[in-house]
Image (cartoon, rainbow, N blue to C red; front, side):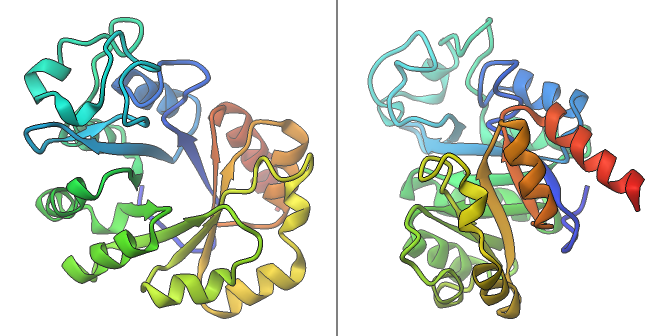
Length: 247
């Protein structure tokens, strides 16, 4: 599944994380079954420099381990249960799984230590046309672009008081990603016509926060964004298919 501008992608947030342990191969495979076209995965580094698919810097919330991911080597991390008997995947394992299922990847950098190795993995697997790297750290996004300008990138931000287009342009990103799910009961209203026009006139794509509420998902789909993250890809994919059927 290549990234195509102008076509809203169903992005499974941490995989199909409402139905399988987040950021695991099981969550990736479940996302495929539920109609996702991309998966959003988070990346930290092990003590021996291996990019690992896990959201938190600390192991305690999502595994039976404790302490920081970066304190443990790959063999040590692989002994942990990430839920339902799943292990923490390496980035390479996740890429192979996604390629087997024709999924694109939306990779969030959670540690500066993994930037170079993530860029190398994209080059090694030749997945430039099916991968976006994103981060809340715009300087890390700039670092990715400096290492390989062919990699597609996105900037994440939580404030509405940011000129999203200027932020993205300052680091060479092709997408903006507002993380506004907790700011309003109906956060889609923050994506005003003026805001959307400003971003699109700059030639940038738009990816939204993760959203699971049916009414909000329907409103976001109406805005014709480039991608919507969700823990429930089955709900979003149904809405997107309904929209396609109406055309």
